[in-house]
Length: 274
Image (cartoon, rainbow, N blue to C red; front, side, top):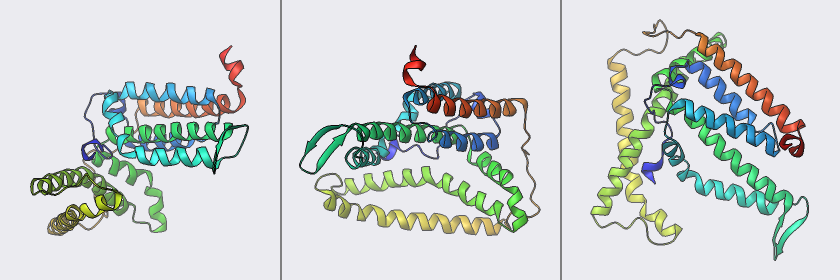
């Protein structure tokens, strides 16, 4: 399970998505996440699926590698589906027994919400797969630079996010090492009920927290030793500049959001097919 977590990891490849400005990827990802909630019909989901598959193809990131990141959220996905399935009381009753009632509206909402959650994870993961932490930091800082006028520490906020993304794979690797070490010492981390499994994770969490605080302290001391004082007076080795492909990406994203909104809301399924 630890090895299946791919959030925050960068996948090196030579694709047009990797060469895009990080500001473009941030804005387009935000617009894509919004677009997933602009429609409630099958045509809208078909358009979103075609767009997502096309972007994955352009990214040159293996589909199996992207899907591997969905395994850790299967429990959250199941809980979301169950809640929508049994708590939505719209339409004809399809199944009813004791306190459990499944309606046509509940089944439809459960399927729609599951697809939206999967597309949300896949779409947002593509941004980290195709953007290095340094590029992401520069993009966030440049994008929110106008907020400095109201005294918001934009550079520090971007640096915190960059450090958090960098620490994700490090902490995952550290967790894997600690779990293997505990198993080698005879610890049983997999058998038993939920409470027993939670108790068995204590020998893993304690050294993990100690290691995390030690790494954070070493990083803080290293930054102080290098006279880090925030973003004041700092320059960029690779300043961000928009290119033609970036403007084209903005245009494609605006076209997609507009298309998915009108097709998903105003084009009936039968008319869309025929």
